[in-house]
Amino acid sequence: MRLVSVVGARPQFVKLAVMCRAVAEGTRVASHHIIHTGQHYDVEMNDVFFRDLDIPEPDAHLGVGSGSHSAQTAEAMTRLEPVLRDAPADWVVLYGDTNSTLAGALVAAKLGLRIAHVEAGLRSYNRQMPEEINRVTADHLSDLLLCPTPTAVRNLAREGLQDRAVLVGDVMYDAALRYRDVAEGRGGDLAETWRPGTFALATVHRQENTDDVHRLATILGALDRIAERICPVLLPLHPRTRKAMAEAGLSCRSVTTLRPVSYLEMLLLEGRARFVLTDSGGVQKESYFVRTPCITLRNETEWVETLENRCNVLAGADEEAICAAAGCARQAGPWTAVYGDGRAAQAMLGALEVALMEP
Ligand code: UD1
Ligand code: UDP
Image (cartoon, rainbow, N blue to C red; front, side, top):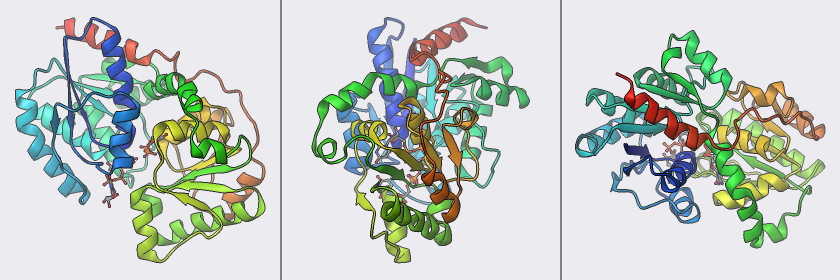
């Protein structure tokens, strides 16, 4: 079986790492080519993931970079087409819901290639979110939908896609299980400074929160209040957020801001934090994996299991709601194994093999 993975952004590198490891451990895959669109390119957003997670060098790097949604997607499509046309692909494997996912789906579908979508079936039912448009399109263009949860399978069934859906578990859970001890073992300056249970960890990068100055200001205001009244707050800043803060003249004087941290540092911090505040999909799940209560800085989430199990609460960008949630964040649960058994990547390879044999 010959696989071609298309990636481009930070959370996709984590998912790709798990896939690469499963490929390397088995004999099912004759070749696995990696195409990197170049959507993320800073050392902290890109290189550290390839280095720390032992991801092989991409076979092709398209150098697309940043731009508006359409410009970035169009550039990725233009550069992807000749590479994908020549690639040895029984399956084009796409991950998550970024513009790189969308470009990969459109190009592969037009070339008549078989597409598998990892993390299929997630829905926020909010079409203002660029990711919702990307994931709905990718799901409908894919031949095999690799779902992390039963909820995702049900979401796809509502859109008539149940015949292509397979429940495999969540590859990010595989990653967290594999790397959590590695992260603690590595130590480092952050591990020395940020002791277990003494701080809150925050991330903010979603378009709805960074491009809306009012939302960004209230979130930063809430983080400042938490830092002043509850516990120190650590905020590794996505470059998008750093730029938005600079342009709007916003800062948070009581919060410790950092450049983006590595995946291993992030896992360590998530595991040690008293609670997490985030608008990231991946960070909500990782908080659940390491059993740290989460406050989500959005009005809805795709990861509804974390809410149902009372390990996560939605606080939007409402300063009072965020501070109130922080004031009562404590160990909740049950932290049931809703994201699989840690072998999602193996299940994915099995599903790819089975689907390839079908007429
Ligand atoms: C993208 C994904 C989002 C995902 C996030 C992960 C889309 C539509 N969004 O959002 O789903 O959660 O990645 O982090 O694909 N920038 C840099 N250096 C970089 C990368 C970005 O400075 O290495 C800055 C640029 O100013 C860029 C901005 O960040 O314009 C946004 O980057 P982009 O990749 O367009 O979207 P993200 O917000 O990162
Ligand atoms: N992450 C990281 N360093 C950071 C922030 C996040 O390594 O400073 C990791 C995080 O642990 C998770 C992934 O990046 O594995 C999530 O990516 P992000 O929040 O950018 O995107 P989303 O999951 O929302 O699409």
